[in-house]
Image 1 (cartoon, protein in one colour):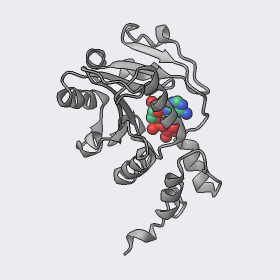
Image 2 (cartoon, rainbow, N blue to C red):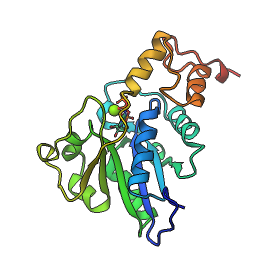
Image 3 (tube, rainbow, N blue to C red):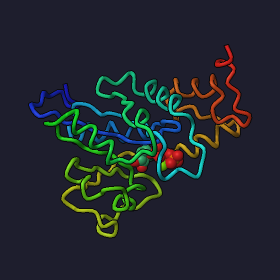
Image 4 (cartoon, protein in one colour):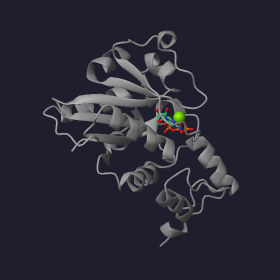
Length: 213
Ligand code: ATP
Ligand code: MG
């Protein structure tokens, strides 16, 4: 059953790529809103392997990011998580993600979901010209970022922008808060708060006692 309770002959599938370091409620609202507006059958969350634009910083190991994404999405029947990017060796390029899902779902309509901050970068992504043939892109509003599709130079027939409830949450801020000992409750799902503290993620000393057993 789709987000609006329908059955589709041609599956309508959202792909939500992200580093998810950690996943937060902004990601979940974005996916939920796009699923509703486009009546998607499911949204596949795809945590990146080594994100190409974040090579300059230490990204939390893929297994932790994957598990937090599973925990955060578990209660939604239309949300699933894919290991496609974390199991592919090397740097993650979205074109590879899109090719993988096209091969997996040859007949589906694919919708790639991104935040407004990502839109100006899209044209610089690897094999961008091929991305538009595989998936429709849906940009969601994000506090602090203006969207100008013309300025971004993206093909207007392949990219939509929708307004979603504004959540001024970023993974960067969640990491900073966790590091400073500030609360992250209600910025990320409860299970993710507990996962972060249980595994000492973003902790200055980064202890992970549960792993020493
Ligand atoms: P970081 O600060 O580490 O870059 P982030 O919060 O931007 O983390 P990402 O994993 O980089 O999260 O983002 C994955 C996708 O989710 C991107 O397309 C991003 O634009 C989108 N996104 C992230 N946070 C929000 C938000 N609060 N509202 C709308 N879209 C968001
Ligand atoms: Mg980001």
